[in-house]
Length: 282
Ligand code: AMP
Image (cartoon, rainbow, N blue to C red; front, side):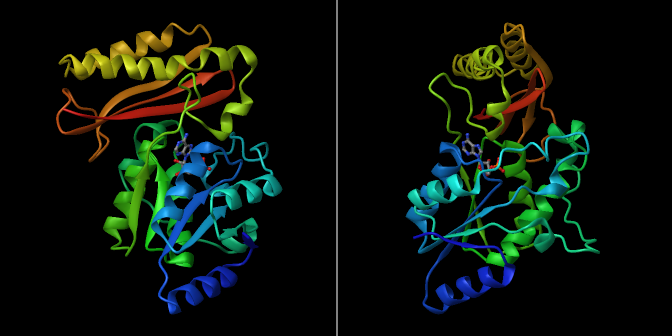
């Protein structure tokens, strides 16, 4: 049975009990509206740890003023059943006031990395993400915490935060789970109209085209960007916000694929912004 707790003290108490019994703890932070992507993280955490905690918290500080905080999909009853099925022992679902009481004033920010790629259009987004993840890591003190590579920039930033702050946790990156037609699973896919949904797999086709070019020896970053941009452009409803080829180390654009790089893009379909990426080695 999955237990549901809403207070920080209840999480601390449960984790302390598990620790006293010599158990390992895994944490899966989410904003709910769970799908197979989230569940893959939970199943991985179940395999690796004795106690699995998942958080479900639509974190207000990572949404911009014009973003979808109010209409973000929420269904806690459904999420609890799905999390239980994936082997989660405890769901932490706090109210915003539990995480950000009146007078809250402290932020965790990874400089530079949070300003690039998605950070250009969403200036405070990653500050909100790193702040809430730092708080969740401190509340839960897990041995391991699980994040999807679907949010590649987020993963890189959280890994850097944990390293810079010497947090005693292993940050585990998990592969992107996709719909059968290649669209990366996302809670925001429900916003797409039927026509937008039909065209959205163009994003993954574009990334695969880049992957194929790399497989036959292409290393030139501007060429790879052009391949991705052109393929996405074949979808008449798509409007690319950015297509970038960056080093995973600093998320700065590279001239050639060398070492570990990220090919990342953000694409608007109507009012819905979708992101996707692939990690590539040169
Ligand atoms: P979210 O609820 O969108 O904040 O996502 C919670 C976690 O699930 C993050 O670590 C995401 O990267 C991860 N995630 C979301 N979608 C996917 C996916 N399609 N495949 C793998 N992980 C995902």
